[in-house]
Structure formats: C-alpha cells, structure tokens
Image 1 (cartoon, one colour):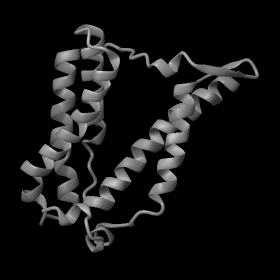
Image 2 (image 1 turned 90 degrees about the horizontal axis):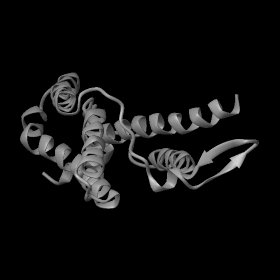
Image 3 (image 1 turned 120 degrees about the vertical axis):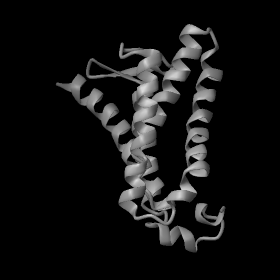
Length: 173
C-alpha cells in the first residue's frame, strides 16, 4: 500500500502543478490555455530526443526544452493572441485546442506513441521510508507543487487584478 501512496503523491504533485499552471495563466491572460499540456509534452519529447537519440548531454537538453515551451507559448501569444483578445473567453479557450491538437499530432507523427523514459540524476538519489524507496525527484515534485500552489494563492486572482498591477503581463502590449 505504501508504494502506491508514494507514487500517488508524486504523480498527484504533477497534476497539481499542471492545474496551478492553468490557473496562473488564466489569471494573467484571461484565457484558459488548453494547449499547455501539449506544449509541455513536446518540450519533454524534444529533451528526450536530444539526450537519448542525438547524444546531447542531459543538462543542455533539458535547458533547451525549458526554453522551448515558453517560446512556443509566446509565439502563439504574438501571432494569434491579438486577433482573439476581444473575443469571448470561451472562444479564446476553444481556440487553444487547435495548437494543442496540432502539437500532439506532430509529436505522435514524429515520435509515435511508444513509451519513453527520461531518467533524471535525482532519480538515483533518495531514501527509504518503511521499506519504500522515495526518490529525490518525487520529493522535489511534491515540494515544488506545494510551494507553487501556496504562492498562487497570494497572486492576483483575475485578469482585471493583473491589469491593475504595474509591470503585469497585460501592460506589455
């Protein structure tokens, strides 16, 4: 039972981070970005490709992936965002399904649907709790999820709150 609890806490932390990301992006932009998961998936697949297939060291491969996700999001915001800014929230949210499906389709075409593993250095480090191995990666996922969720509670709670903040995302354009 305990191994499932540890795995569930780690996996639940990733779901919490994804959900918090959706909320923070909605608060900043007023748009529910349904393509967020697809952008993240493509970034991780690029890191895997660079590291496992192309032989790039893991650190630079992960850095490229961490830079790719915001670049894709900013491109969407610059190319399509202005055309959707005056539309209803449901139209803006639905419009993000297009890039989500396109990115997932391209990823499936290039990488197919076989499972892949990207081992992190923190997977090796860890400790035992009542005979169950807890990796440093699992601990970090839980701590990051708790920290980000706690910080999200003190940030502005809507697009109008963000617009009132000097230097907020809404004041960039």
